[in-house]
Structure formats: C-alpha cells, structure tokens
Length: 416
Image (cartoon, rainbow, N blue to C red; front, side, top):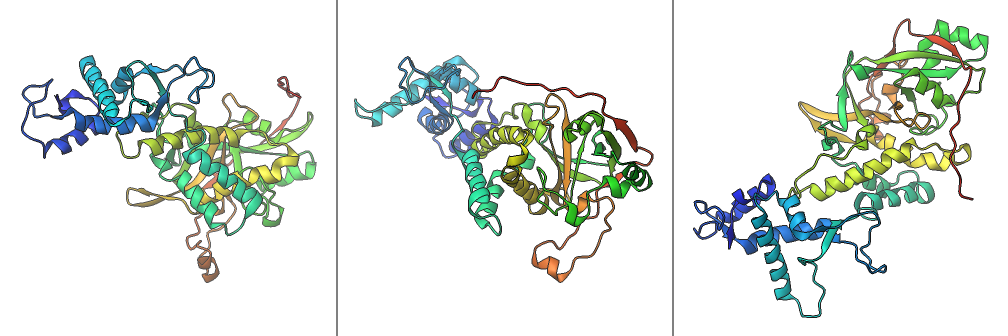
C-alpha cells in the first residue's frame, strides 16, 4: 500500500511526504495511480508521532482511568486522522488507521498496552501541567518566594514563555502583537484620577500633562504592571471603565482626559486570546509549542484581569510586574527593517469584565511630560542604552470632571 502527497490536504504533511518520496522507488500511489507514492509505513511513522504527542486515550467507563477528562467527548481513531491529516477520503483514513494498529502491535508483546485501537476513542492532550503552564508556576514561585532581583533563571523562564508570541493569531487572523499608529481607532484612551480637593482640580485644569500623567518618581506606587518607583501609565478605552477601575466612593469628583499615541507603538493585546487560536498544522515544527503558548496566554489573560485584594497586592502583583518589565525592556522580535519591542499591554478590566479594556505603558515611553535624554555609561551598564521618547500625549481640550452619583456591586455565593 502506497500513499502520496495528494492523499492529504494538510500542506505540512504534503511537504514531509514529498521529501520522503524523492528517495523512494518509482512505484505508484494506491489512490492516485498516476502519481509516485511512498510506503504507507513511512506515512504512518509521521502520523503516529503526531497523534501520540497531541492526543490521549479517551474516557472509559472505569472511574479509575487515568485519562478521564470530565466533559470531553472522545473521537475514534479514523476521525482523529481525518482531522490532523486533512485526508481526501475516508478510505485513506481507514487504511492509515489499520496501518497504525498493525505496525504498533508488530512490536508489542500480547500483554503489552497498545495505544492505537480501532475501537477506542481519543481526546486532546491536556497542557494543564506541562510546557508554558509549568514554566509559569516555577516563575511565580521563584520571583515571589525565592529570588526577586538578578534572577537569571526567572528571566530564562519568562523568555521561553513569551518566545515568538508576536506570531500568535486568533481564529479570525487577528495578531496578538500589533502596532498602533497615531490616528488609528485604538490610538486614543482615557485616564482618570480622583480629584475631590478644589486645589487639585485647579492644578489639573492648569497642567493636565503633569497632573494626569504618572506621578513623580518617589510617589509612584506599585501597580498590576509596575513596581514602586517605575513609571506606568494606566488607562482604559472608555471613560466609564476608567472610572470603574478607580473604585471611587459615591460623591467623589473624577478628573479625566483622553491620551493619544504620538508615534507607532507595538502592543501586546491579551484580549485577543479570548478566541481560539489560529489552527496550525499538526505537522508544523512549532505546532505543540504554539498550542501550549496559546492555552497559557488564555489563562494569563484571565490572571492579569483578576481583582486583587489590598492585603495581597504586594506578592500577587510581583509576577505580572516582572512580565511587564521583561516585555517592555528585554523582549524583542523581528519586524520589517529591524527589531520590534513591546511598549504597552492591553488587558481586560477587572471592574468591567464583559467588555472593558485597559491599557498600560511601562517605562520612559509612559511619561508624556518626560523629555528624551541621551543614555549614559551608567545606563549602558544596565542594558538601557536606547531610551525611548514618550509614546503618548494628552489630547488638548479633552479634560473633564465628573461626580460619582452611584455605583453597583455584583456578588456571587462564596464557599466558606
């Protein structure tokens, strides 16, 4: 039995079979008689590795089965093969499934466990405890409880987690990392602060750049994406979301304004991970890595949007602060004409979880009142030779004041 690239629509698999076919005897495909084929055993070896790397045996009636995944319906081997190979006919699926079973049993003793079976079902392998999830767990423990500064192992872990994240796209083809340029729809956002004191209100009206931008160095409090003392500009894409994030008491006066990007800026948009990821070929070299990264980013998106109680802020903010600092200062990726660097992160609002979106810029690009300054030899020592100019400015005439008249609270039952 022989197969050829035309037996499958998956392009990566087609290329792999074509590479094998170059050195194969000149014998015809069993399904395409005018095309040269390769032994089905060769195709089976390619497919076997992919199936065993991405699927587990499905649920059984036995409650003690280790592979049980509640709520996950298993699929038969032929259906799995059609999904991953994009075969052109069910006959190809059946023939390939029989080959996988036959080849495996040839090497096994009668009492040995067989992975492939025509009567069993299969489910996608859970990445819950592997790959990026395991790296993230180790990273959190390291920076929270072991070594916080000059932690090379933590930096190495976070570099692996976010490696090539700029290549990720959702099922609609929307990239997770993209450039926002001045004048585009995403280039404007809101920033607010509580301003109950009339003198503060006057100061804001006179100098909104200074009063609504990041606080002075020594007054910068730690936040979800920045440690104390580091400049960060938090905003939201609606005034309502921005006010909700402040959690102001009823009766508070809120000062707010629009900010806009002044130059093209690369952002990581974690809200893009709400959708399923773009389906890559199972035979692509980076398939497993990209799938694990997407699964992790879906959980990471949820984690950075969760409300944090004041008593827990110090420790719980450390991992996300480290991520923001790494992405904005160390993470680079290839772009046309050079290298790109993420300078802002977009994430879901904890206070408006349905459709609220926040944005944060970290570091020198976050301070609209800062002036670009040349690097010094001292800065070079700490790998900050290129100091970017501010990426945003306040929109002239956009300052407004609002009074909070009411607020709403949503609760859910708690398990005690």
